[in-house]
Amino acid sequence: MALRSRFCEMLSVYRNPGRGVAALSTSSKPEVKPAVDPLGNEAVAPEFTNRNPRNLELLAVARKERGWRTVWPSREFWHRLRVIRTQHHIEALVERPNGQAVVSASTREWAIKKHLYSTRNVVACESVGRVLAERCLEAGINFMVYQPTPWEAASDSMKRLQSAVTEGGVVLQEPRRRYE
Image (cartoon, rainbow, N blue to C red; front, side, top):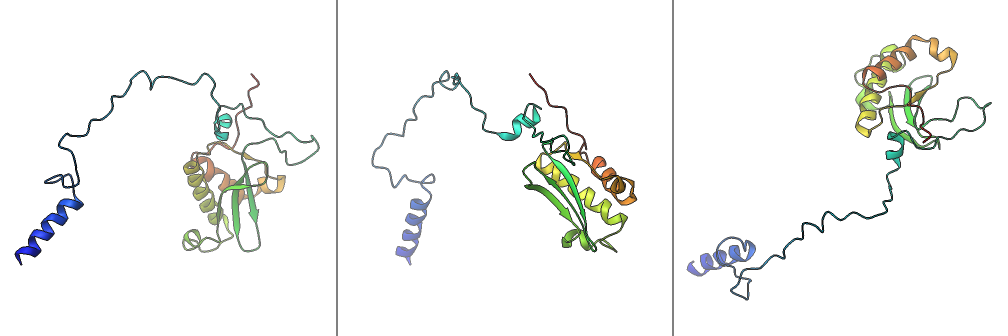
């Protein structure tokens, strides 16, 4: 019994070298940390390459694809809100000019669907707009373009989706590009 308690005590010293005797040390002197040069941390490289593609968008200096003037909807945006209405569901997504979806919300998702009576009505559009706005803000997207067709712009459900997104804190108009 005495051997076992002594063994457990030594094992705890080996596992926690900060407590008790420094069992793993071979020298009696404490370790000396090298001095940090305070001026060495202040040195800045003369050339800086920004590798964050979103930074130029936030500064409104990033290039926007222009495309042809006859193409509708226009391709001149950084982020675009696209709403897809099918026979049974509503899906809203934010996409980049290359067609890649960045953020999306749909009534196909169980988290949204379980709170709705119908996945196609005006309340469903408003719920999808609220959820999409929250996800956009979490992703860091504050501005986007919304280009509805004339018949979509006239519908009550699209108006409610649009108002839910703007009430959520997302601006449905991108800042003008700066040419400096």
